Amino acid sequence: SNGITRPKGHKVSFHYNSQVEDMHFGKTHPMKPWRLTLTKHLVLAYGLQHTMETHLALPATSAQVQAFHDPDYVQFLSEVSPQTFKALCTQPRYQKFIPAKHDPPYDAVELGPFNLSTSPGADCPVFDGMSTYLFLYTGATLAATNQLLTSQSDIAISWSGGLHHAHKAEASGFCYINDIVLSILDLLHLFPRVLYIDIDVHHGDGVEEAFQRQPRVMTLSYHRYGPYDETGHRFFPGTGSLDDNGLKGTVGEHFALNVPIPSGIDDRQYKYLFESITSRAIDAYKPKAIVLQCGADSLGGDRLGQFNINIKQHGECVSFVKKQGLPLLILGGGGYTARNVARAWCHETALATDNGSNLPDKIPIDLIPRPQAFTGRAHGDGQLFPKFQRDHKNDCVDSELEMMVKRLEW
Ligand code: ZL4
Ligand code: CA
Ligand code: ZN
Image 1: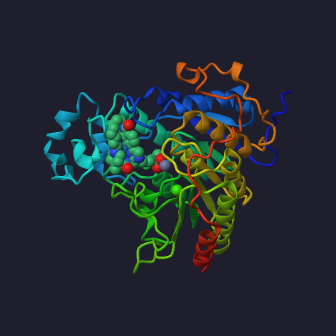
Image 2 (image 1 turned 180 degrees about the vertical axis):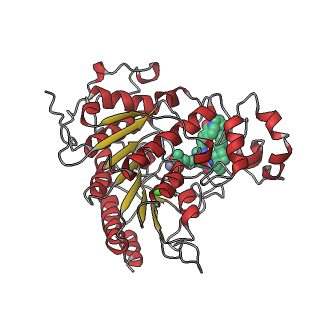
């Protein structure tokens, strides 16, 4: 009745547990789980729940998480809270995970084991309900993965997942459990080759590192990368140069691809890079399944990002990958201007179910039971595709991008 229809010829499932929304990383911490509330409400306001299966996610088990992570780290994560942190830190089994001392600017926060901290300035704080949050976002991604493994879905969506920086025994960059690595390990039981594509503005270092020694996973990350800034730092995490292609001297060499991008890249430039490089990678590698991390911090106007791309082009990356017709896992990731995260991921949910052109331009805003934070003039201009103020000067020049595409042809 509103023009929204079920997709023909493929099945989509959506995996989520609203409990993740209640978490707070800290007052001014950029990671806001309530962006997932906005996303969910927008999806529901457009009626997209009728175009796919919606599954309530259950928490992952410790055994599942240990398929990649160190058992001591998993044990710590399952017990930690602001109340238990100090006592846990003194336990003998965790001593070897406490850094002796750390370099600036990290010395501003007092670090416990595994790069975790209760200091307010930490990237990976210990907060109330943290264990619940971590095991739920991981459970959602693993349930989505299972839908693909059992051919019950052709596309499975897990917007609370996509936390690409977590290492085997270390939290990093707002990521604690690497749900992506766990998912790909599961996919490898069935699919001989899995392609991982990452359009978050940050380098997908945790996923690349986990698979850098082996050829059954190709990782391909598009991200901001550049020289040291005025403060002597690189854009986080500082890895992912063009020459970073998997661990040299192992069979994994040449099975990691990185596309380092200057700030200010626009839609046209991003489309050129994404489509030429992704299609070459797919033609050469012939993956049997694809995992797509859709970090929304690559949008213009993001609090942490430095690109100038619009929701339309972000979504065209999803459509381009979907068009390959392979089992597809769609994940979230970064995204720090919450209203734009919700718009992008709602639009991409619609694209997955072939409803990309069916969403009216005006957000049906009065249908959205919105939280306090979404009221007021600063939030929501009522447009699904807002015209972004370019907030980063475009120092991204075509000739540089063309050279990169040439160098990545092999
Ligand atoms: C914050 O305002 O570049 C954390 C982090 C906490 C609260 C108040 C404390 C103020 C920005 C970021 C001091 C903050 C100092 N609070 C933070 C080297 C850094 C050490 C930490 O999208 N300081 C580290 C991580 C990146 C660094 C990006 C992206 C994740 C993903 C997938 C992770 N870390 C310098 C920064 C704030 C904060 C404000 C912050 N941290 C911005 N960028 C980082 O790829 C989900
Ligand atoms: Ca990326
Ligand atoms: Zn990011």
